[in-house]
Amino acid sequence: MRATITTAEPILELKFGQVGIANLRLNVDDAETLRAEIAQKVAAAPHLFGRAPVILDLSRLPRLPDAARTRILLQAIRDAGMLPVGLSYSTTENEALARELELPLLAKFRAVYERQGGDESVADNPPVPANRRPRSVSKVVDETPTPPTISPAMSGQRHGSAVRSGQQVYARGRDLIVNAMVGNGAEVIADGSIHIYGRLSGRALAGAQGDASARIYCMDFQAELISIAGRYRVFEDLPIELRGKPIQAWLDGEKLHVEALFS
Image (spheres, rainbow, N blue to C red):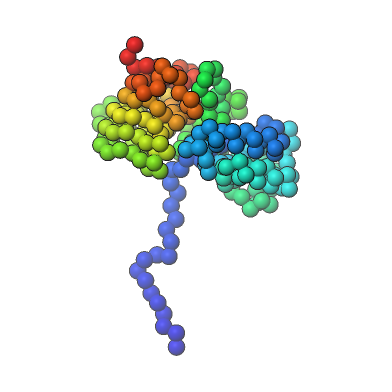
């Protein structure tokens, strides 16, 4: 007779948490061009784009590609160094395509697409906090939830040790104060403002739930990416006048500004 093995521990635990997933929107159905452009981004910022999970957004194409063509596009993304994990933009056709490809469909996933001048490259596919549903600059109508109220009486969340590669610190409903460095590949997120009294080499996302008045302050600016209320900028080549300097970042309408903290 076979003995029954019992254990007090569950076989698995399933939780939905906040993750950074990039949105990759295609404007042209061209696998070779797609592969080349993604490979260029990965080579320029491997810590940010290398093996980054992406949601493929086909909503801007003149015609929705069939399953065979979409598989070619997905393979081009993989070959270039990113990892497609699903489709975005909810329509009946998209849902049928996602089912045929056996991929999840993120029906309400949106990302901000912003074009700015200068040497800084703008993130076409930045990681977006899961609870954030940002407005799109591409004139897609999207209802944005009201940002939570951050009480002035609520003290900021303090983090006294270094935030190292692969780590994430999130201050929910308040400011985040980091008294150490934020390393390459690390991520700090706050619903309010972010204050970093050390080097920022990773990513900083302030106003994660939509607070456009949030700011980012940093004493040694060498960031991979910064974001305020869903507006993103990546810095593959930092301007020499800002590299290693104290800076502040804020939103003016749809544009994210970065300047030296002390003139």
